[in-house]
Image 1: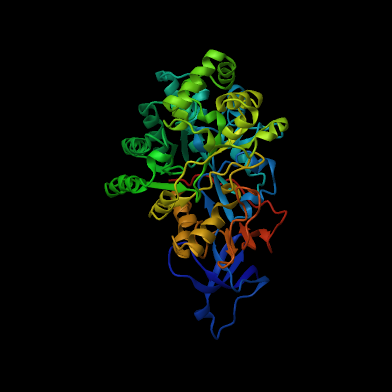
Image 2: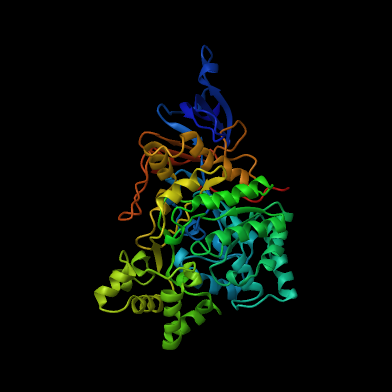
Length: 536
């Protein structure tokens, strides 16, 4: 007999077709039979070692988080209920151009400090890898959910060029090409960039195009955090579309938002740009999170010139009164490129986490509020915090627009991504709630998407972008990465005041045919593995 039969489920298969009632049979980690209710009438129903009554539950493919920051969390936290509890069965790591492979000893130390606000310092991690393949092998020892990896272009540049704002030499560009090729050969699914983060932002389009050509030769895709989500957002999107077309490389636009006051109501302009490119033959997808605030690090707000040279150079500039005043002027008057060309509004910058517990009083307050309590200017407070916590503070940035969020999520190339930073005392609730929030709020409560549409956005579409031949759909022969949820009660438990509350209405999650969530509780199963690029 087979391992498991899930009886009387309402199957939403990820392909966009209407739901149907069926028994779904799982054996050896795969879906081996789907017996629809009509076909089962008058026949003997499938039997298995175990039966699960799914009456009233939807069975869908597991959700794919196209933009995750769990690079160290998966190694640090075997439970990882933040994602497993949402029904996420696969995360895409290596985002925004900065992660932990490929590295050498120097760049590993630099990257760990540069993105401590995303992932912590990693003092509890044994960094026993240096290559992309080594990192994926580490994941293969057993993790809570599956994970794919993007080669981080900023880390590659740090390794080959350093953290300086200059053009790469021909020899350095050749080395970057080799590093990207090696990463793709070792299993990466594409390449990411963080073009408002150092050192990735120092790459000109010609350099990025050359690296994208390498990615395209392996069938991968380019995933840029582009140069502006604010004052120059549309121009930045157009730049990435043109660059990917020149390289003949598939494009996936990370956290494709239209934020800040300058972009209110302008989502249709972005979608028009993408529709024209799609009609001309471009291969483009995008991901979004279903919330208005963004989340990043406080150091990311600084102008690019202040970040040149790496973390130690940034701290030195912050400690220098003259350089600090210049930074303040760029932030508050000019519009720092780190803040997307828009003068910073300190009442929108909420501190969500710090590394030093002694600084906990800043968490949950805006920079402006903390400054008022201390009787000082907002920049004095921000500077004090950056220096004391050595660039580690993470923030929420309340600059989004609900109309734009809803408009973009309806688009035919949209997928879901949490952009969830799990670090900090008070992280963005999207880290724990993105996928049930889509299903509960935007499907059931608002009707922005139908249930079948939404499931397709969260499963089959991302699987197609990742070129996964046996995931993202409920089909015979596919891997049994599935989630069962109650469409009447599924909801994000996480809120801005209680961001780590787990979802409701998701009683069962299976990865590779094994229960990681059972009866609403996390099991001790580590069924996740690295998902490597499929050969062309």
